[in-house]
Image (cartoon, rainbow, N blue to C red; front, side):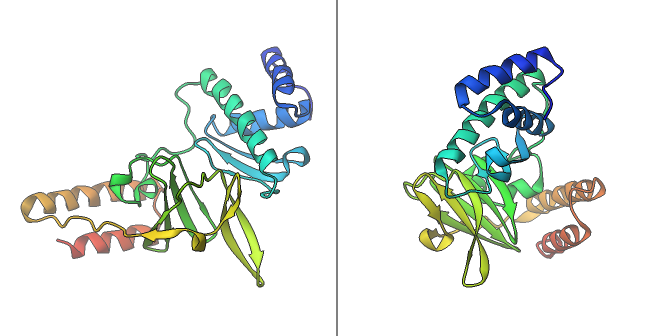
Length: 233
């Protein structure tokens, strides 16, 4: 890794060395990764950072060494500092979608609000709501809510047991599987009636069509959602 050409970058990387105790090369690598993610996320691959990993602003981090919670916290703290620097450079930049930006980010119950972090791993998608102690998980079209209790989720990782790979969530105390958390009832959406409900469905169909045309939704996702909405008319 060569030193940044920008003297400002050189100064901040040097300052972060003192604050976070990573090498200049590792910090410069992470700066490039966070900047590529517009300050909202980073895909990195550096030996000092545990190998390949992913960071998302809001709290979730995936590293090649999920059991090393100290390293996880150090990387997260550095990424947060870099994110503030990068977002100050370009305040309007946003690579990681907010909770209201795409239909993928609104598959959980509305009353949960905006998640602290959301993403996908293997066959499932997840959204974490720290203040509400809730983790929403979607497999296919099924959404399940879990009570995270007093645990604070800081990352997601892959764990292999019995010859199978499972998604686990990391906390400062260790790994947390879905089986470790209590399931909570998923609220049923209120059924709409009359012309108002029909108009709302038609508006949603129009929005879905726009997202499909933009490539946000796949053909299969668009067709399935359209059929579901039309069945409600």
